[in-house]
Image (cartoon, rainbow, N blue to C red; front, side, top):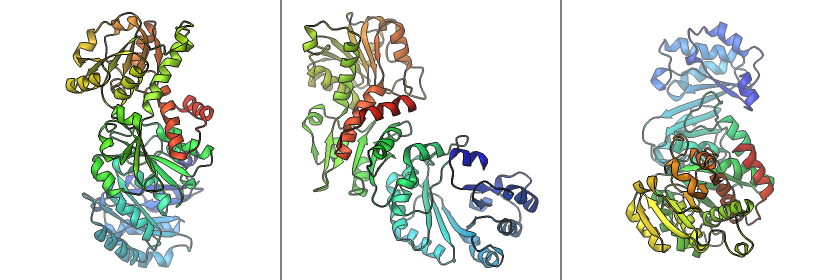
Amino acid sequence: MIEAKTQGADLVEIRLDYINDFQPRQDLEILFKDKPLPVIVVFRPKWDGGLYEGDENSRLNALLVALEFGADYIDIERKAASGFLRDANQVKPCDSKIIVSCNVDGATPSTEELEHLVAKMQNTGADIIKLVTDATDITDLVQQFKLLSHCQVPLVTYSRGERGLISQLLCPKFGGFLVYGTMKSNSIPGLPTLDSLIQAYKPEWINEETTVFGLISKPVGHSKGPLLHNPTFRHVGYNGVYVPMFVDDLKEFFRVYSSDFAGYSVGFPYKEAVTAFCDEIHPLAQSIGAVNTIIRRPKDGKLVGYNTDCEASITAIEDAIKQRGCTNEEASLTSPLEGKLFVLAGAGGAGRALAFGARSRGACIVVFDIDYERAKSLAHSVSGEARPFEEIVNFSPPQGAILANATPIGMHPNTDRIPVAAETLGVYQLVFDSVYTPRKTRLLKEAEAAGAIVVSGVEMFLRQAMGQFNLFTGQEAPEDFMREIILAKF
């Protein structure tokens, strides 16, 4: 409890069923003496997903003892609520609250079934009710948001698992009673860490008027976007929140959330596929065939797609070459990429942005992709050359070429891989890696050791995020502030 307070918690939940050889009066007296935070006490039986397998009356009596010792909240299962509440009302202090909870395993019930369940829980006389489900898809969560908006007593509701994360993060917008977080030592899929709640999301800043933006991706846990966008929103006084959205099915996602969110970043693997769900696409994104930013236009609700990856990646590469002083005075009037061979690993959304950007600067493109047909399609679009991905390992370009990795190779947790043979890196003038977790990948380390200029995906990430911020808010992104966050957090 002391550590939770140190990490920023406002209250803690104690699971008595996790205490070995639990002695109610002895242990609860120790736990509640000088407790540093308000406490929710849970003593979950095995029949409801907990560890306790003993006598039911003993379990309920232990919770009554917790009330006597000053528990701020008692969490009791719906099936045991009626009898417990009758006894609890005789002993609980006036400021103690009873939470009646229900864990729904398996597929999320229909809206009607959930409403019926919540009504039953309300009828127990609970001070607060808690409903937990398993999210098989992010679209399941819309039912919980509706429940939060209409429930007549304080409600805690969320879905477990990575697909359920936004049910916690957006809880304050829809009127939820509290947000659960985990301590650094106890990571749980689908629950934000206390650190991320405090540094990135700040639930106390989120309200009914907060504008919601999300990152559509699969997977999504690696994203640093919330650590950058949310503090920047607050810095400029914009009432917005940016959350990761684990999306399995784009069509179903846009059908269910047809008007709920104001805009999106689009990550792997959806930058190309998402174009089918945009009502309009900016000409640059249209020519690239990939969208990394979507805005819901306020006047008509239409989804408009943009691509901020292209200029972000190419200007990062150009600026790195210029800063190294690798351009002559005459070339300074043109791009340092003009006439260069641009070796591209990956023909997905990020790869397409790089290819079109490099081509617009006069570079010659050769594309390698595990899907050779996709490589050929992109190469044709930029008047380049396509090669099978397995050939990149031994590919030997002319001295001074540019290498750009637009694949997930080298991304955490598989950080020991690189897309090319290390011995070929010495011929490249510059090596760019779109991967930004870790900040300096093995590819960049080995390229730097070989004498190449290196550009991290963090620089591209920052620049494309600045473009997204401009589109999200209609304001100019505060570059200095965003760079400070990048330096501190990445």
